[in-house]
Length: 137
Ligand SMILES: [Zn+2]
Ligand SMILES: [Zn+2]
Image (cartoon, rainbow, N blue to C red; front, side, top):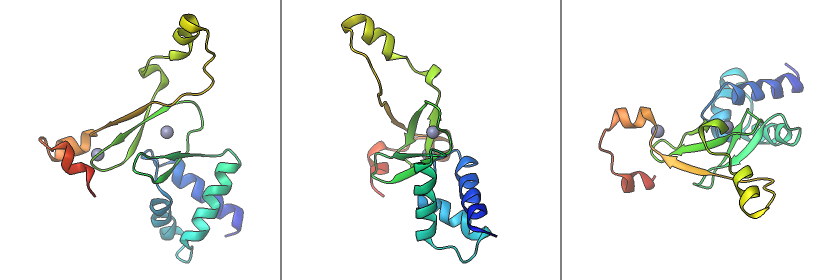
């Protein structure tokens, strides 16, 4: 398998993984396909793919870099328990651009919304999970 096929395969791993995997998680999956691939190669491919605009790098609030196969505008919410990151559609949130423009004439070019909580899987596993316990690793 040549280099660009390998990189495409890495892109596919990210695109088919709606939890926004970290490089390590991509590496774990890539190893099943390319047993000799190194974590460094996965990092390099992921960085090249994000420079090409094929995927997006996002920073989790825990400081880890994660990769997103979706490049259209959308938001993220992060589970404080399993630390997976999920997509939130723009239509599910308010769109502040227009109201900010109307109220103070500020042209919003870019904004971030940070949402944290507990995902359905984690809630079902442990219904009365204390929030502070989940903050530690
Ligand atoms: Zn979770
Ligand atoms: Zn996303």
